[in-house]
Every structure is written in C-alpha cells, then in structure tokens.
Length: 409
Image (tube, rainbow, N blue to C red):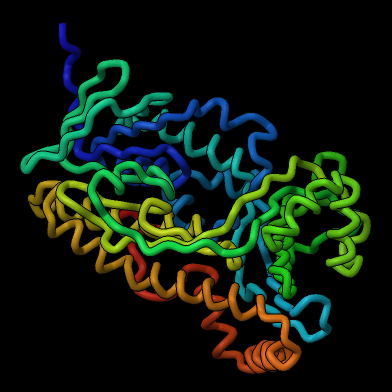
C-alpha cells in the first residue's frame, strides 16, 4: 500500500545551519516546510564532532534572535567587541571596535549552533524534519515538485531549495555550472586554551604563508580562556604541522602570536580543510533555488561564509513570504529571479573581496609588504573607511531583508 503524500510549500534538501535556519524562518511565517538531511543530526552533536566554531555577524544574530534563538547567542555565544588586523607581528594595527551595545559579531561553537537550530525546528509545527534520510527520486514538474525518500515517504511541494553544500547534488542534476578554483592552502581548524584573556578581541594576522585568525570563545567552567583558531597554511606545510602533535602545534601557534595570549594548548581535535572558491552561474532552475554553499563558497579569510548563507536565507524567506501573500505559487520564476537579483551582488562582492585579500596577503615580496602596511595604516586613520569595513563585517551594509533587521516579514 503506497504511503500518504506529505504536502508542503517548500522542500529543503540539506539540514545544515543554513537549511535549518531557512526552515525555521519560513515556518515562523506559516509556510509549511519539509527538510531532508542525509546525516544523523544526533551524531553531529557529539562534544568533539569537528571542533569548529562560527562567527555570527551582527545582522545574522538579529535574524537568529527574531527566530527565537536569543538563548543560544546570550547563553553560549562570546561577543566580539573589537577586531585587530595586522601583518604578522608588525606593530601597525588596523583596529575595529563596536561603538554601541551590538557587538561586531558573536562566536558560537558549531555544536551549540546545530543543537539550538535542531531543537527550534523540531518544535516548529510548520516544519517536518526527515533525518537521516536520502532522496530516492526528485522530479521538478511544471506545476510542482515530487520527491520520494529512501523509506518510501512521498513529498509534494511548490519549490525545492538546495541547501546541500559545496558538492550540491541538486545543483549538478540541474546542470547549473559553477566557476571554481582551489587555493594552494589548507585551513587548520581547532579550539585552543590560553593563559591570558582574549578581551573579546578577534585577531587576524597575515603571514606570507597564510592568515592566522584567533576568535574569542567563552571561558571554560574553571575559568580557562579559550579561542577558536583558523590557520591557513600552504598545502605542503600542513602535513608537517599536523605531525608535530598537539604540543608542537601549540608551540608554533604561540610563536606566530608573539606570545600575546601566553601559553597555548589545544583543547579540541585539529581538522584540516582544503580551501577553494566556487560560484554558481545562476541561483535557480525550474522550481529549484540554491542557497548557501550550494550557490557559493569563499575563502574563510573574513569569516563570512556562513553569514552569506544566513543572508541568503533571510532574503529567500522574504521573497517567498511576500510572493505567497501576493498569490504567487512558491515555485513561480518571478520569486526565484527576485531572490537572485537581491543576493548575487552581495555574494559576488564578498567573494571578490575575500579572494583579493587572500591573494594580496599571500605575496611575500618586501615592497608589496610595505604597501600592505601603508594601506592598513591609511584605513586606520580614515574613520569613514573604517565604518564602511565594519558595516560589511557586521553584515549591515546594503538593502537588508526584514530578518536581518531583527524583524519578521
């Protein structure tokens, strides 16, 4: 006997942070949603699943608060009150500071972010989460989307959203091409404990071998200080650094920090991530819309990757909600076109800026190094330029969807 069909306005394939945030946002506006995620959500909540943390920009934090996740940010997040950018240990520093009650960003461990989003989605009456589950079949007809899961569940929806990551199967099946390249670098990611307090300061130190970011996390229960580290190094150097072990790698980190945080010890496993860039030629196809890493992937030099995905979710929520309220079908091409027009410029500009920074600070020639230091000093002395860069980092520049202002649509 065939299983009954589950009807929804939107089918989301991919239950990572962007897919879950989008589902929660759509559900908050009374659109029905089914989320299909192939991984077991509980396995991703293990204490040391990947040892990563994310910088939630101010605008993204507003959206999460509007969706009821203030407890995550206030209970588990560590505010970033200032950012310091320098070329290695050179004394000339570009300094950004929050001049109001809203921090520049909030650091949250990925496990806590996943747990909060998962709990909120599970409690939303408008969202049905199917996980772990995989698509056995997906048909995008002229009038609707039809899907079948591996357990036989049948789904009918108005539109399918691909939130299935950099290697998006839905994007590939739709024949959407991407521009892509690999950087000759690997990101070493972990969490470290350190003797001196970070003072809610995020550090971005640029070395010819690659940038080193130290991002503040909440202290441990015993008062021990912690930070997340994202260290981009040449691919050829990464295996050697990993062979040093926890103690040797901690010594190298302290040396690159100039002893600023005192004694450093690894507090989580180290993961290595090859770095690359990609951007889809278009964000939609028939009854298909791409969000997050399915649409774009950038260098982590400014910590904007997840925030671009959250901004995608905020914009797509607004155009879908307003379109449905106006009587349009969720899969109407006008909705997809409006979403792409809204998001492509921001995504492209951010991708270009991070790529340019990664390449610029990867040049080791001394004349170029002097020009870089001169540029940092010039921005430091120009308040309007600093305010512009700060607003970009906070995600508050440009035409913002309602959710990024902390409001429902």
